Image (cartoon, rainbow, N blue to C red):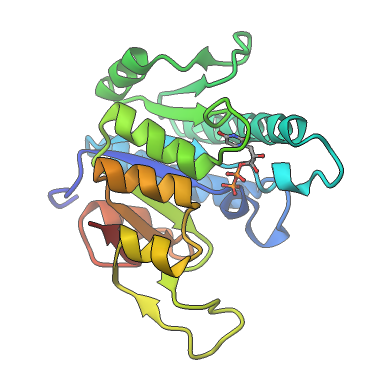
Length: 236
Ligand code: UDP
């Protein structure tokens, strides 16, 4: 692999990305493809942290009539299911991993301990951060921003079903325009559907670039790490 632009990255995989065309649950063809790309990065010395979403199983806002906090805890548990699935795929390929959860479940995974996470990364283990931030009313995008700041990741790679950020929904409007670059403040001002505002502000305050790209082409994660201009880059 050519010289990489980033040495330590935070990969954010939405639940939707893991579900593929099925829209629900885990598509293991996709999970394996993503794992293969992650393996290539790890083999070339890139340190990879990953945050997985849960929307393919449950989102707090789906719980109509439910207590919001309970519904959010269900969402956090959903991220743990996805984290274990990704861990299994990676380990099957010979990649060493650790799942760290923000909600203690010690029979299943390690608790989140920042120093330990850093050590795992230095040893070439992929650290998968599960159970979000451990708090209701937050998202896994915010988790990615928070953990990226904590582990000193150089960038957040936001893998989506669409290949970047558009001014309007590209599925609905043929004339939707893709942005190559954006400033954090524009994402917030224009209300662009990239990350929620809490996550975007956290990245802005800590100056963590976000690269939004599509998972349609399996090579994309590698291309981003090599600094190829694909998708949309959001910075100050
Ligand atoms: N969630 C939460 N706190 C967090 C992270 C996640 O309460 O810190 C819950 C929330 O209900 C959310 C669900 O977990 O809807 C799944 O996460 P998210 O919607 O971010 O997943 P994605 O859209 O990335 O699949």
